[in-house]
Image (tube, rainbow, N blue to C red; front, side, top):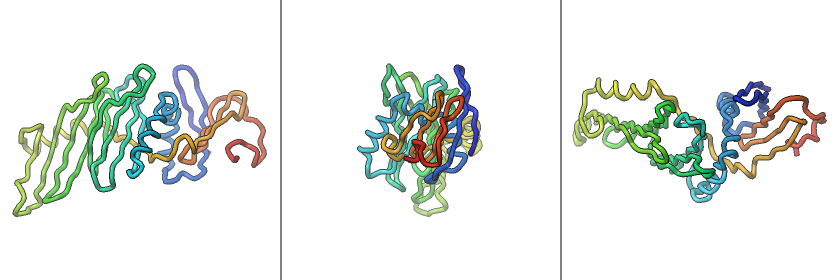
Length: 247
């Protein structure tokens, strides 16, 4: 059992995580999941409806999601990532406006990752593509109101010495630059950013059950097999088999 203190401006709650079978999640990922309140945010901001709708539409593709405040305004965004294995990944960004989830835009990456700088409302998509050489691209986007717009682009192409490939190059936007300029520009984003952690989709509603386990305690079993107990005070007396989460 791992105890975590979760504090907000309004209350302090004691969070208990009990591993029941993490289905591929590491202990660190489970801790992040609980401390960030991912499941609570998904329900509060009605993102579960969006996830299930897109999961039905994209049934043939792998689907991952994250729920994190991307622009430091106190409202978490939903990021849905999907695509065929070995092909381009697409990342739909949703936020919560006037009590409904709203799609802001879609980013692309391939064989890379998504990094974020919330204080600057910036998202960086990294792509690495192989062919006659290797093309590495960093595309920076910024959240502006109800849209996401591209604000910067760096690329490095290494021809690996192929005779029939174009010469190696470094780009900033459409302009060719030196390796030192490329390195400084890319590092200016990497050094400020953190990687976005995604979680594999697995039917949120059908595999989540919840209830009360004390006068001021609630419990919920989420899709990753984690039992989350939150609140304050004493828990009801249970024997080994009569509690709700063993039903």
